[in-house]
Length: 136
Image 1: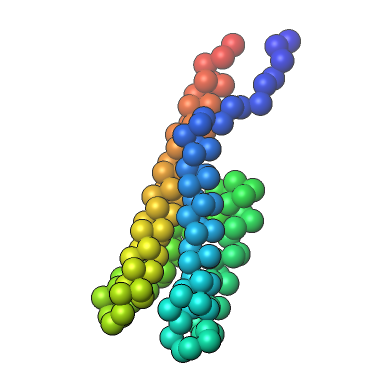
Image 2: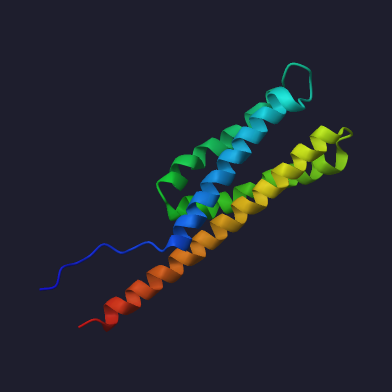
């Protein structure tokens, strides 16, 4: 009887995973720094820094490589994308605009990483199922 080996994860899947985790951590750090130190709405910091709390929740799921988390994060990120676009358009100072554009870029990277990750894993799973069906 042949030995059963664990499926290998392609490097592209691993790369999308780390891009998603990195951009999510980047959004968390950017949101906190923005609202507490760099360009808060009020001097001394703002309660708007709490907006990053929903971003902390999926971090564990992304690190554990849970497919469901990648799917719903790709929808959640559009709220932050919208905030970034609105603030880039409406902020009067240059610092706020730059931070908002950074948020938009991180949101786009997170969405692309999540979408591509899900697509690659589904494709890899379909190939694995097809090979299992062909093997004697």
